[in-house]
Image (tube, rainbow, N blue to C red; front, top):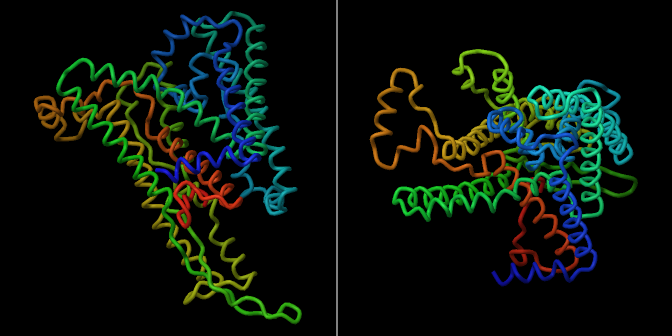
Length: 447
């Protein structure tokens, strides 16, 4: 613990690192300040009543990544969601359009060009999304009537999103990095105090089962965080050897290294995809009469699809062959690609199960699981859990409106790991010890 506090002191001892940290904290404060500025023409009371009905739909997913700004329709209501969407679309399009693929391979100049395309696409998506939001507000008697309200809302929310995008880029370039991720992190962590107060009020009630339930929830949450940290740091090291070759008069190569492949390479993106897709039917069914049981449909995560985009085994195999690298015992070329694909499939299967587990456990604690709808045995299982002391929370949850779901937990832990790893690398680079002493480095998700 002394080494940890010493590392924290060292963070503010290094002038450049101190400036970066204070700069980041200042921009995060500006971002949170904008959350309290409501867009013009909004009926707050009506909005609060409407939100109670639509909080579990796609709008709730948007509110999560906007840090609660969408729930109040602040000037930052859309947050960084359009920018993230534009980035994902551009990344996917590089596999379709050769021109974008070439830009991606051109280094820093190509990256800047792709970022410019991301900004343009963000504006287009903002204009479309803000028009839908304005029409939705009018349909629910939350906003004023007329085209003036629609134009004002579109301009206000689009400008707010562009400003948030600029804040994220400034944090990445002049702060401690991970600008967009830190903005999402700040929006989620701001709900922690209210969540803790809810739990404390439940404990003060004095009910035995309530106290036991809180202790169990805290224990599960701590264990889940430790599990996430362990899995996010897990790597499969594939051995790589480089053949010796002559470059001019020098003999280079012959070294042994390894290729680290993450267990959860997709990060939280597959969960975000799945959450959005799951929320779309619920959102549509809010406006049409239909059997409510359909709202319980569940889709699998998009892990395999996303991994095939960000890790192209054919491309990796070709790059190894071009640089004289090979996997011992595996022929270069197609055999190497098949070998990597086998490893990737196994890791992705485990990673997908991990993401599903992390997303399911908090949801089970908070919202419960309707065991009565299990085929054949649902009625008997429901009767058993409702009549057994200590299990009555399973069908309906623990009754908390706690802020941390599975997706939130993955984002918080992942961003915290990345940020600490970046700060630690800055300290080590300046001959300071890291947070855990010499020889003990914390790796982020990208390390």
